[in-house]
Amino acid sequence: GGSMMQESVYLRRDAPPTMSVKNAYRIISPSKTVPIERCGQRWGEVIKAVRLRGTNTNSENNGGVLLPTFAEPDPNGPNCYAAIKKLRKRVFEPMIEKGGAENPYAEVSLMQHVSDDEHVLGCIEALEDDQYLYIVMPYLDGGELFYAIHPSGDAQPTFVTQAGRIALPEAQARVFFRQIMECVN
Image 1 (cartoon, rainbow, N blue to C red):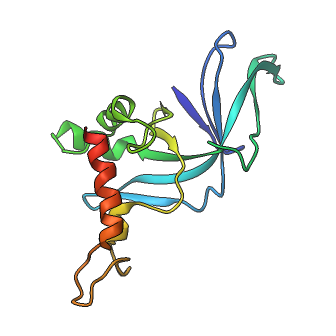
Image 2 (cartoon, one colour; image 1 turned 135 degrees about the vertical axis):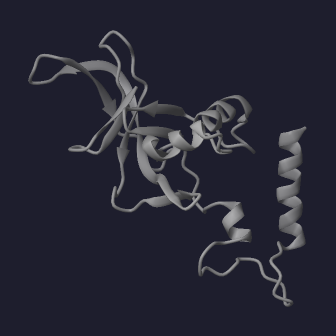
């Protein structure tokens, strides 16, 4: 399991003191999240976090309990940030029980088995508590291709032809198509 510690705004795996905890996540601007909506319901949000690394040492809290310690990464280093999908179980689990097409648990499993870290986004880890499922992924700046091509709401498409149709420039479409084919191959 995992826990979101509201007072310090951290997310980490709960583990006995004898077990090494490799990652913890410090939430950046918890009020600035990106909502996740499906079927007219808010499933949760995406949160940006700093990925902290376990130091393989423990510290003792006021109650004498050993807790893992974590180090801040180099802010300019690789894999410094993570995107965390915080999904409300009370919203998506009833949809799964009714046979809904979207299943976050299956998404995690697929991400763990199909990712190649170049073309398909992987899952660093998945954590859960009684209320939420947290899917921790590498943070990629720039948004989703889907929304660049077909945005929702009042946003204007990034790529629009003179005739008003949504399209990618041919050179960029070739790059995306090649990446998709490399992944499938």
